[in-house]
Length: 469
View 1 (tube, rainbow, N blue to C red):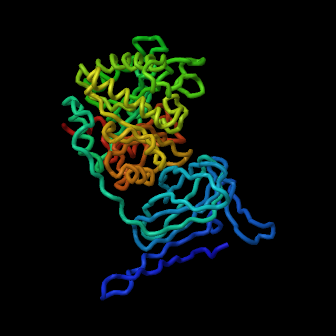
View 2 (cartoon, one colour):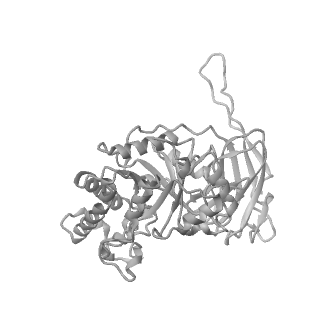
View 3 (tube, rainbow, N blue to C red):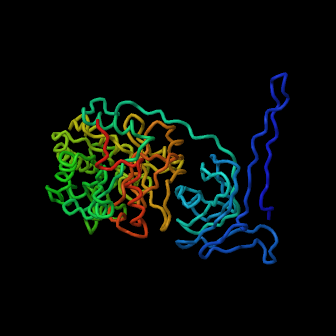
C-alpha cells in the first residue's frame, strides 16, 4: 500500500553547457491510490492478504454502472498523461471519463499480476477534477492511477487532394470543404437503415424544431448478390435524393453479405460465424472465392455509378471494423483484409472509374491498428466506431488524440459510427459523427436535451448550416 499521493522526481541530466551542470527536472508525477476513491455500483476493496496487509486494490468492475471516482486537484487547465495500474486476465477495453466527459474506451492488454499501462492524454480543468474508471469489457482490478504533465497535442498536416488522382470535381470539392472545416466544425450525421421511412430523421426534426443532419448514412447490404434483389432497398435512390434535392452529404457503408458459403440466415452472413467464406483465398486469382468477390464488386460498382453519373460525391466506408474479426473480411487477419481493400480500390477506380468516392478507413486506436491500415495512398479519412458504455457520453478526446498520434496527424478523423453523439469540444473536433440507426432514439443513450444542445451548437454543422463550396 502506498500513501495517497507520491511525488516522483526525475534526476537531472548532466548538461553539456559550461554554464549549467544539470538540466531542469521535469514536473513531478502524481500517483493516486484506487482505495482513496469513491466506489460506484458493485466495486469493492480487495486485499492481497486476509489480514489486510500488502497490496490493496479495487475490484468488481463487472456490470454497467460499476466504477471508481478519483478526485484530482490541478494547478492549471492543461494536458496530462494518465497511466493505470491494473490487472486483468484477458485483453480489455477500459473506459475513462473526466469531469463527466467520456474520453473513450481504450485497449489494455492481458497481464500476469499487476502492471502499468498508459491510457493516454487527458485534459484537466484548473482546480477540482474527477476521473472515473468505468466498466466496458468487465473484470479488471485497479490499483492506482498516475498523472504526469504532457505537452499539447501535435498539429495535423493534411493532404490538399484526395488519394484518387482522378477524383471527380465534386469529390475534390467535398474533400476541400471537409478538410477546411476540420478542427473548427463537426458535421452532424445520422445513419438510417430504413431509407424509405426515415423515422430517425423525423425524431431529430421533432426535437430540434426542424433541424436535420448534414450527413446521411446508408448501407448497401441488400445489394449484395447473395440476397438476389437487384433493386436493393432503395438506398441508391435515397442517397441521390439526399444529395441533389436536400443538398446534403452521403456516406455509404456495406455490410457485405458473404460472396459464398453462407449459412442461414443469409441476411446475417456478413458475420464470420455465419459463413465459410475464406477471404485469404483471394491471394490466388484462379479460386472461386476470387471470382465471387470480383462479381460482387462489379455488381456494387454498377449501383455506385448511378451516383457517379448524377455527380454525387460519396464518403465510401468499406470493410469497416475489420480489426474486430467478427466480419468475414477481417476473419483471416490484416494481410487478407488489406489485399481485399486494395483489390476493391483498384477495381473501383481503374476499371469502373468511380471517381466520385472519397475513401474512409475504419480504425481503432489500438497500436495494432497500423497492421491493418491499407496505406496513406489509399485512404482519405480515418474513422472510428465508438459505442460508449451505457450512461457515458463526452467528446471522446483520448480516442481522438490516440488516433491523431497513431496516424501522425496525416488524416482527418471522424466518428464513422457512434451510439451516444459526442459533446462538441475544441480538444476533440471530430470531422463528423454518425449516430448509428436507432441509437438516436434511445433516451438512455441520447436524451432529448443532448440532441437539442448538439444540433444547436455553433460548432456543429447541420443540413441548413452547410458551408458554401
